[in-house]
Image (cartoon, rainbow, N blue to C red; front, side, top):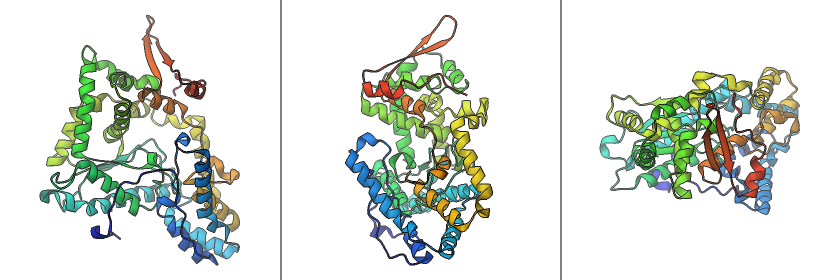
Length: 434
């Protein structure tokens, strides 16, 4: 149900990693547990923070305690009859354990909440763009190499690199930033977090208006154009299609970051790269026709931006065109998918009590709080330290220097004075690829 605009002052949430305590009810049977589970639709009750250094240890512990309390209703069901009823409800809601069904429900939920949010924001658009056939959503999509792209999600997972480009406001009424922030606020209020999680900042979809995209790309292009003087653009196309090497493949972005003076702008342009590459290379849910006025403008903006053409921190080209799905052979990915596929095969044949324990683990996993080690392989993999390193290079925290040797073998040199980062990345293989 769409909430009336007059009753909501929607705004983009400020993530602090501190969940709210959920309202409680007495749990006597499965119906009570299902009603309590409905409360967890809202992400505020399972909110997490990924960067532990942004909170104190006491705050981190307190957040874990609140989430544990919010999940405690799951421990109240004792009879197999109640457990079976809850499991059946969970399966119907989420598609679990069939990963293809869970994936479809996740994608459908993202498309649904975009439509709800866009309709709620239609009042702020110029009259000629209100009630448009595309509902004000010019393009939406996500990373095709994430679990959703491969049809292997679990309920409550996030949707990697999710984005939408939307028709913006009448700027006499509100700014583009206020428009997109309010749009995100409606996502926060209307999304079912049990199906698609947005309970931390990195999981939240990127929403940009057409004007925001054009303005951000102009800023990046102003740096890129100065940098590209004397460079051979063919080199960047060549790098984009090399075998997957995360640091080497992001050479354009790393070099460009060195031209940007402030840390804040470095961060903004790093984040822009993820958005732009998702728009350029991602798996599309909706894609406006180039024959329309705004669709043509979107494609013109992207095709005429050096930054949009050369940015390469996701490296979809290398993954897709050179190696296809070979990345799935990586041990950290393979182990998690193997565990999920095995669970998909055997789940319905397991005792009800075991099924219920698995469902509890899946529910808690949406905030990384699953405490059942028996099923942990379905949820966890090793941290992507290469990706973390690249992000710190792009932020200017680590200096990266490329050396082209006479033998045409590229050498990469890393420098930082931060002892924490030295320790963090000392075992990272910067040449690791597929």
